[in-house]
Image 1 (tube, rainbow over the protein chains, first blue to last red):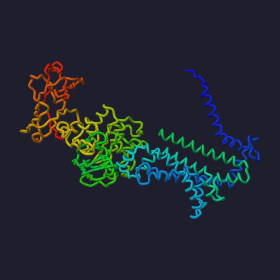
Image 2: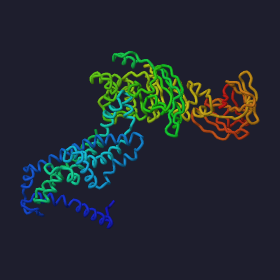
Image 3: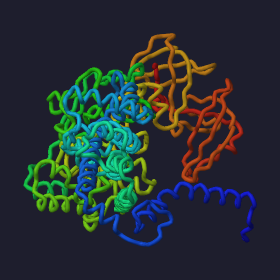
Image 4: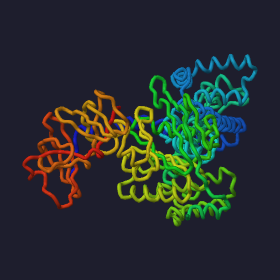
Length: 264
Length: 372
């Protein structure tokens, strides 16, 4: 069969490539700018230098923000996995009053404007005197992360053969032990995926962080925000590149682990 | 006796079958009644098959015995002890599922030894005992494999070993051979029978395959619409079904609708259309009572009108299906009723198509009267 170039396909391909370029352009530009030797954000960079990476890694302010972001994102992933898994089990396995309501409530942060959640939590946290604490931020981030976890885990729970759990119970495992020893290991790909999404949802967030963090302990996105307002130097390009690399690396690792699990 | 030997070697006393009794067991799902009152008693060591079409409630009944589905009403007793409220993992019941339900993330030996691990047996001892049971199902060399590396038949053997390794006295099987091809199925039927006899365990087996039920069981409970339509030995279930549903569900059957004319000394005369048929009656019938005469195709005979067979009725041949070891003939009576006749291919006698004055008949003891 000979391949003939169809004009329609040609147009489709060109449009696709164009859209892809538009989507990826900011990342490429930031990546290039981060290597600029100049004091200002320059594109294209007039030379090559790692000075802004040095500035990032040697500034305690940036390092604090980085640590906060990682700790909060990791705790958010853990917390929303535990809660999200329990909610998923309830939604898939049981029939109870208010099930449809619970599902809507859990999924609503996906469509609700984040700013509304942020303002609401701000006043709540002030009242509870927990504003600015790590735990409070983790809870806030979990609210927006749990819908992802629930979406991914319910999908794989629906296709999980319940008889595996029954088999474990007939062999003497209590219901809880059956879930721990049989269900969770078999849902590992979904749990990893859900955890990654929760991590990124937290790592990425600026709106909730703006309202709910202390200025002395901001998350990375908030520190970028502050920097942009005050000084605007190419450190933010270096930080942004670093954040992108972390996200892509995480995605790649999870994909790798999932493939390994499926094979195993 | 190999299984018993393996059980003894692992320091366990001989397995004894448990008795099982169900009293008024019901399950309703909202508006639909899946099971509507099951009563049965099973003595230790028996092999009971729950047989019925899909939706008859046989699997629901099994899952209630196992403890995975809560009954809406009724009672389950094992060895006389009420276990209705006992959680599944404390019932000590072995369970084999239709799709095997092997744990995909565990090796074959860890699958088989799972029940032992749950009972706190150290890993090395657990692997040794799992190995014993794997050898007994002919899979000694497969301990380190994963379930997905085995064929369907091998997976089923692993599932069997897994359900037996902790010496349960009651084993439930939910259509365990449903996914296997015919040859493998026959082989596994024999193996399950052998294990049942070796161990003396009580087995409750669910299937919709009547042949499987007939060959394997001590008792067959035929289920219809959530109740037991018949509870009897395989032979009685086939030869003396108590009602039309049972007769129809197992094997091929012919029904002739009529009224009782007289009933005397265990022989009833039933008027069907214009002819009077003499049939053995298990219970006395009242004159004029509605009665269905039931005859299996292999008990009907085709002959010449002059041969003087019992209950002869003139008929004409409609069709013939050649099956090799036998032929199925469809004949039509004068009133239009069609009957199926199975004639063994013995190579003797005149083939029906060569008989000019054809009649179909049967001996009185080869028919049955059904009143429900």
